[in-house]
Image (tube, rainbow, N blue to C red):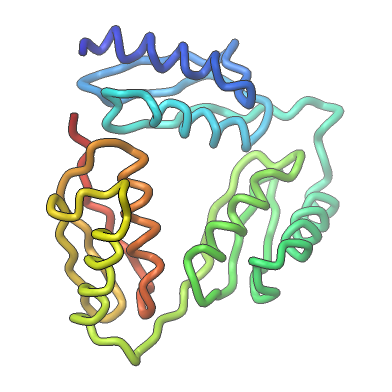
Length: 217
């Protein structure tokens, strides 16, 4: 598939997604690497645009350079915005109270510590959905579990890969050391890529995942 065809399909997918206003989004492609430029009305739309592009066959990487432009009527003072972000996270039972947020010019920085990566991801998702947020920087730390050896962590992740119908476990390799997991190999889609990361993060004892997976078609 040519770059022109991939870029056109990405544009069509952006238009097709009702959560994304694609009118001011420009798409370019270079050897399957997609670049998104332009403006959107919320951080959630910026995130959803990247996900939409990743769904397209032939896309190997998405460089999301979209800018978030908050309409004047939706702009919030940083103090008010911080209150809304903290309240939204407080109402989500997946996010522990150890997570805090700072706001500067609409940009959210999350800090604190959690036990699991899914809690970290949930905090990013919830904060990014708050009206007036222009970006999210997640500095939350994931705690480890010293009870599991590197070999046990690696074996557990490989077993999780084999259980997941989305993942071709034979194409992936796992290396673990002191809570850090490195994934290498090739996947057939971004959906498979994301499933592999979720499986790796779900293993007890994991504090960091180095993603070296390559999307190939």
